[in-house]
Length: 348
Ligand code: SAH
Ligand code: SF4
Image (tube, rainbow, N blue to C red; front, side, top):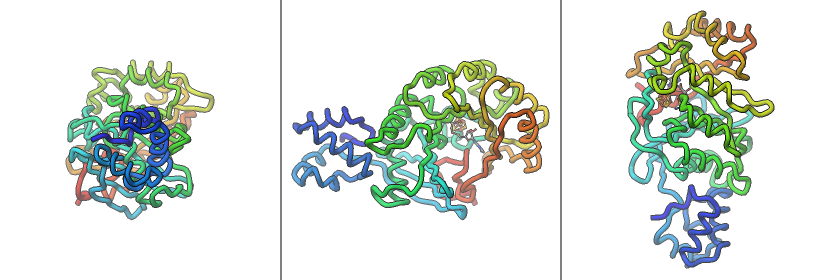
């Protein structure tokens, strides 16, 4: 079975030609699946009935299906999706006044093993394809606004669901390039953020990409020892080397690096940590997102108390390091950062 979603325009033209059809058929399919978000081949009517039936014998747009949708009291929706092989992935839709954000998964599970993250407990089952990554955006937008309906305001994409983007680099980049194309979904790379736990060689590779989203680095610790305990990837890519790569990262005009910092009660939230964080990020044009830890019964941590987070934030701000406190979204439906584990229920 050939899957069309995830193919570039030249690849769809090649597919057309191999099916004995003219190149313009490939262009029609490209336009239909990405610009009009049609996910049933049978509904691409400009192909004509006979051609749809012929192609339908060996091709589909996507195999991704919605397994379940969970709706939070704050408007967040968690989409549990079933992929072609029966594996499950999750996408989260977060509406705001001026924009919507869709949080995407790029792997089923994750191999990085961060101690505070529920996805880690799944291990990594497999990488997702570019087509599967894109299918999340198309399915969510169609569900929320209707097939092909233009969203009323800007869409932000964050690669912050299940998985480590930079351990599935090629498919993630391919999904970005396709979704950025103005002939298709047309989502500006400036509205996309890729988050990494710190895979240094891929950070350097990403720096050189012609189409490059914003980059966020999950730091969550201020000493090597502390980071290794929380994020075992630190054994391979140390905090010192990671910050060196960040220092060398070529930022565009007004671009900043985002550093994410999960606030864990009495683990990494002291005044001393805040001061060390300021020192570590000195000389890097950056901002910090403080993420209060989202709990799960399986996770041995608690969120830092709100007043602790505020003091931490103030210590950074006083040193001209902009710091924002992330409001948890959809925690009642297990949709918040670090809670994605393909659950069929919310936490009880
Ligand atoms: N794998 C990537 C992106 C997915 S995780 C990465 O780690 O960067 C997205 C963000 O959620 C990361 O910054 C991660 O540190 C954070 N996170 C993980 N578990 C969390 C939890 N239980 N509570 C709050 N944030 C968490
Ligand atoms: Fe993987 Fe990110 Fe979770 Fe770490 S925080 S285990 S890198 S998904």
